[in-house]
Image 1 (cartoon, helix red, strand yellow):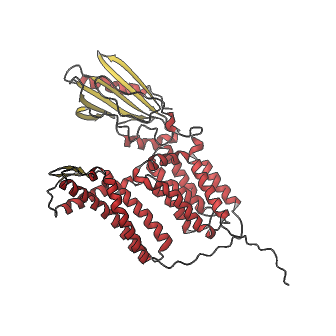
Image 2 (cartoon, rainbow, N blue to C red):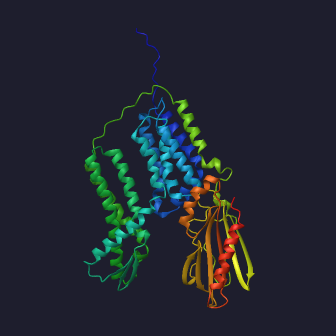
Image 3 (spheres, rainbow, N blue to C red):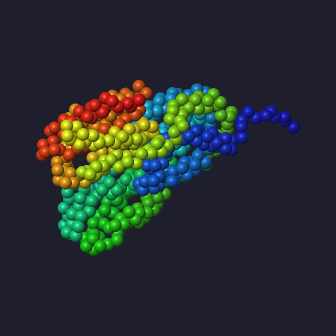
Length: 474
């Protein structure tokens, strides 16, 4: 009998690795809760991202599949440098309330956190970056896809018997009109196909050539399905004199076309699949590195938006005001997500003015003057013309009594007035260096005493500048 010493290698069931990955994921979600909440609002409640509920399940399956191949990193790593850099950028963008890159960067924060603790493994990339498909950042692809769909449909319809006239994204046929809107861009099919394609390649295809072929088939097929859907709707509308229910339920038609295409795509994918090798367990020499975990946790804590904005967990709940900024001569101003509003009336040189000062806390990602829904100018306003002068927008319109009237407004931060939301966003990057995140919208309106609004414009301009000079945005 030969005596054997205790083994220095740990039994690798993969449970410890999976627990550490899930722990880091939970910590990132907790410390970046305002960003997670923003992603939830604009992804899981949006029909374009209806697949988002499947993403966490897919990520968990990827982790389960690779858990025994993950190895803890025992020494220092350059990934920690990338983690700190990404955290600093993420926090800067968060404080500046620049939503799109904040959302996009969060999965990379998770990835760099994991790679600072584990040795390099492709599964960690899939686990972390698959979350990008549940992140509402893909809207930037909608305009080019919409334009491409319009051009292709116009080209195909020229070869049909249906008389069509295209004006921008509007298609006119003898029976009526169709608009190829953003929802007709095919973005949802594009995202879903890209997501499923990359997952299928990860699990089943090892050849780069075959992977490229399958990728092209998937993405081109997703676009073609959407084009066929639009053309079919136009043809049905022509044949039924716009009476078919399919015209008003075109989303379901898209999925009826998409599912058979998907089955065909995976059939082709099966032909391109590689014979997969059984992955052997990797022995663990040691447990998780305590020092590495501490460094990662400290970095996440230092740059945590949740701790900076504590105890506010949901900045939208600060929006307690519910005042309609309206008068008898124009509808309500289109301003949302504000923390408070001051509304007053006053008389200057016998001209009756109404003004509103909307204040925004700067907490979270939506409580800002540059929020995309803050258009200020009311809908259905009978506008004559508009102009901008001294960082103030002047909108000349007709009141309900058909009298000339003027609306003046501007976006404000600690650095000054800005006429455009995009200009305000640039200002915020410098303002946060001074610790100031608050913004405001100043709006004044009045009916002109005569057909000329020259005097009214001068008064409104002076009032806005005076109001800004007295405004405290600290």
